[in-house]
Each structure stands twice: as C-alpha cells, then as structure tokens.
Length: 253
Length: 347
Image 1: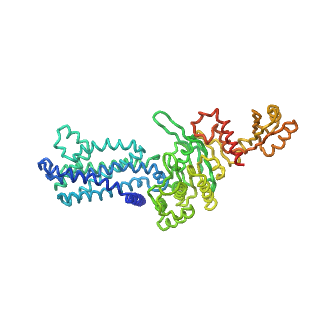
Image 2: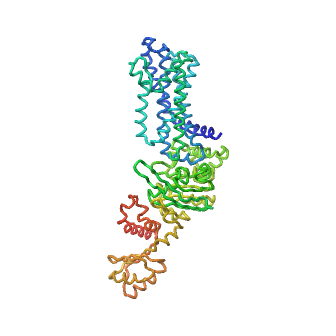
C-alpha cells in the first residue's frame, strides 16, 4: 500500500537526519537521567504508603520520568516542521504524489522510535539504581508512552505547521506543557495534595496515564485505573492523529 | 489542446476584516513545448496563480487542465506529471534540506514519485551530469554555492521526467554569472527534452531571453499576452532622443507634424519622441530638421524594453517594489528615462 510505503520513506529520511545530528536525542535524555540520579533518592526516604500502590520510590518515579520524556520529546518536535516549512521542504513534498498524511506519519514514527530508544536507556539506568518491575509492566509502560508520543507529536507538528513561527510556537508549548506536567503527579503523588489541587489535576490527561502505568509497575493489570488510563491514552492518540491529519491534508498548509 | 488550459481561475482570500481577490478570473493557454513567462509586480497574483496550477492552493472559481489532468478532480494526477521548483527567496526557501547530501535529496525525490531504486540511481546520475553537479554528490546541501543549490533544486523538479515544469523565480538572488549559466540549462531543457516551462520572474531580460511568450498580470488579471517582440511593438514605439543646438521649440513643432511621431516632449534643448519603427523613420525625420537648418548635437535611438511595456500597461515599473499606486504619478517619467539609459548602454 502506497501510504505505508510513503510513511516508511519519510521515516527513513527523518531518521537519517536525526542520526546525522544526534545531539537532541542525547540532550533529551540527560534531563530525566539527572532527575533519576539526583531527585529519586529523596523519594526513597518517604514513607512507602505515600507512594501509592507502588510502595517503592523507583517503581513510582520511573513511570513518571518516562511520561516526562515523552511529553518533552514530543511536544517540541513542532520546531522541526517549522524549519522544514521554512526550507521549502514541506511545499516541495506537497507537490509530489506522496501521501500528505504520510508526511506527518513518517515523522511521528521517527519520534516514536527515538522515544523507545531513550526510554530503554532510562529504564536500564533505573534498574541500575534499584528499579525492580515485572517485564509485563515494562511492556505496558512502553505501550502508554508510545500512545502519548503519537498524540503529542502529531499535535505538535500540526500546531507548528499552522503557526509557522518559532516565536509564537515556543510560548504556546511552554504554557501548556509545564502545568500539564505539574498536574500529572510526575514528581510526587497527587494524593499528597489538598482536595482542590487533586480536583484540578483531573483535567490533565497524563494524570490518568501515569496512574495506570504505576498500577502496572505495582503488578496490578486489571482494574478501573488501568481501563481509564488505556481509554485516555488511546483517545488522546486517536484525536490528535485525526487533528494532525486534517492540518496536513488542508489545501493550503 | 494545450498542456495548460485554465478558464476563469480565481482565488479569494478571506480574513476576519476583509476579502482580498488575489486572482480574479485568469484564462491561460500554454502549448506543448513552449517556454512561457509570467510577469507581474509583487502582489499582482503571480504566485497565487502558480500555486493554484501546481495544486498547492484550491481555486475559489474556475477550471483548469494541467498536463492532461483535471486540476480540481485529479490533483494527484497533476502532481504526478508536473515538476515544481519553489522560489528560493522570501519566507520559504527552494525546498532542499541543509543537512541532506546532494545524492540523498535526488534519491528521496525519486522515492516521492515512487520510482524504483535502480531507476532512481540512474536518473540521479544523469541529472548530476546534466546540471553540472558532478563531484558534489556526497556534499551537504549547506556547503553548496547559491548557483549549485539552485541547480540541485531544479534537478529535483526533473527527477520524474515531467512534460511540464514550473519554475518560481528560478534565478532570483543569483549573481549574474550563475544566472546566465542557469538560463543555458533552462534553454537546453526545452531543446533536448521538449519540456514545457512555465516560469515567473522579476527580471525582464530573463523573460526577454528565455520566453516564447509572456503573460503580464496585474491586480489579479492578465493585462497582456504575446511574444516579447509583439508586446514591445504593440505597446510602445521606439524612443528617439535628439539634442539640438538651436531652439528646441521650433524643431518640436516640425517633428510633431510628421505622421510617424506618436508623442513628443521638448525641454532644455532635448527632444524625446516616441516613434513607430524608429530605424526606418529616423532618416526622414533628420531630413526634416536638416531642411529647416536645425543642427543636431546628438542622436539616440533606443528600443522599447519589456519594462516600457510593463510601465504602459500597469503604470509602474517591475523593478519598483513600492506599494501599488503610491508613486504612480511621478514614476513613469523617471522609469522611462532609466529604461532608455539601460537600453542605450547595452547597444
């Protein structure tokens, strides 16, 4: 099928460009690793009950860092599409018979692959620090971050292509990502907070995803938290991909 | 039927406050194998028309057939059969990625057209030779010179051997040497491969040298079509400038009575005449002055340029990028003077 072939072609091109300049992949990894090394040890002194069902600082913290990795890595990819648009590359592709959705899908696929590699490094470092989690949990965790990355990357590319300006894009992303991150309970459990904060935190979709990932890391695979997490992650990915495709299919992007 | 047939092509942009009619009903017919130029000042509708014809922008009205495919019903069919080289100045650049190798760009472009790898390699090699990029295959795009990068961008538009190529401002921003080099390549494209070329340009001499026919667009409508010579003949005569030693008023009256003289202005000992077929008219005009005993200090006959044509049609010079109409009143004099000087220095 030509859509798949086109997607793989775009993917290979983007992957080649990323490998030529791997600085960003490495920079993206340093932040979570620093958190793991310099922040997670603080959590080990907290009473086990405050860390929810996981009861272990690393089982609690690594899922949060994985989501943070996905959140930051994927929301900023929009910058690259602005650069591509400015170089005339997007226009050049749009005048060829290549599928316009593949121009988006190939890029998203590259971002997912990058994230999986980064996540693997992060998990291995976690294991070195004392993370012990079931294989099934780790696999489920990959599933969640892949869905989050698909959704956010598609949204980021679409937004980048719409605003076409780094100066407008950067503040948009920052004002959105930081509150979402803080409200997701990545660093500390949201249950520690007062009632009003917990109520606001319900609006962050990542809250549900992280809760479900932590359930998995605690060995709980079948409960409502898990179902909610899966529903939110799949829903987010589907809606964002649909929105992204709409933008890339627009007559004049 | 032509390779481009457009009827009533129009595009309106709506923003919150107002509606802008960028292109208001353009009819175009381009025959197979022609090189046509699309001339117009900034904001005339040049790029909008080009973007509609290349499926980048959907027309709000009108129909078109481009390279045998219907623009509205089969845009992918159009994309398969046309090559497009975006302009390399302004907000967006010419379409190559700084961090790609030259050969990668060519092979990726072939993949975008679903050309098999073996065939793609063959075509890339041929284009590298044809566009004088030999030895640059493994260089990063950002290390190329302006002219080399532009030749690569044109090569990308040719990978799928299209019968019709759109070049948006192909030589803008290049030094004169690279520009004339690129003209050679564009000429060869037509003479060797029979490719139809549709180009937009700011440079009148480019249109004059390269194009079989020229379309002049202004305020979203086509105001003139023809070969460069036809346009020059139709719109302005030759410009004859005479300096007389005596009273220019008497000389002016004498010459104004001649049938070949269309227009005449006299000031400070200089007569400026617009005459039809200046070369033939000159001897008889000189005889008239001679018979009246008027002596001449100098004579200059300059051919009309496309800029004169442009000026007559649109009231502004192509070289001038000021907002439309702002300097319209003062401008024709100065621009015509400049055009005559240019022509004179070329001869």
